[in-house]
Image (cartoon, rainbow, N blue to C red; front, top):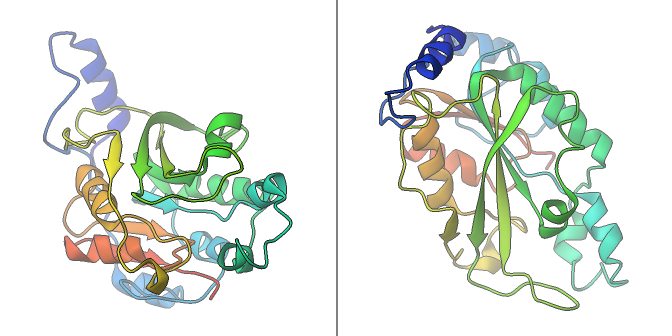
Length: 251
């Protein structure tokens, strides 16, 4: 495995070199499938378990990419529409996460991510406006980018109707792009409509976007983790481009 700290220092010292590249220099540590089986984990399959339990079974500094789509309890509390049983029926039935639980997830994700690994965190407009910094307080995760997903359909809202969700991108230190992020044509406003909405998970996410992001920061055979997998769109994206997936959901 390449020493990412020394590599980052070398790249910073050479002012003549571009900060961009189409190669990926860092390498995921070797893993043995039998180790995951022994830990009670299955690759490239759906499995029912608590996401914190799954993360606890993963080794330190071992994973290049994690997706996380928490169900924010705070959003429902602040909206207070008074009709969660109807307008938000599907969403309200999902297990809710407090800020304390979310911070516990992020703390374990920081441990599991390899140096310069990425965390893709889905957030709502409320979180964008109020800030994500409380979630990562005390952690060595650095906010490096954000993508706005235009879902192509209207959502709820007392005033403006919500049409977008946001993907906040964190990187475990040392934070750098060169030699880590190799695809540079992903726009920061991404339009992708999920078809057959009624047949999908309540919180379905754009598979094409997630596929491009996986390609940007992983190599063939790497492991992508999603400890709150929902409809398993991350698994679908990862397996389609020959990455492995480890993830779970409570149901």
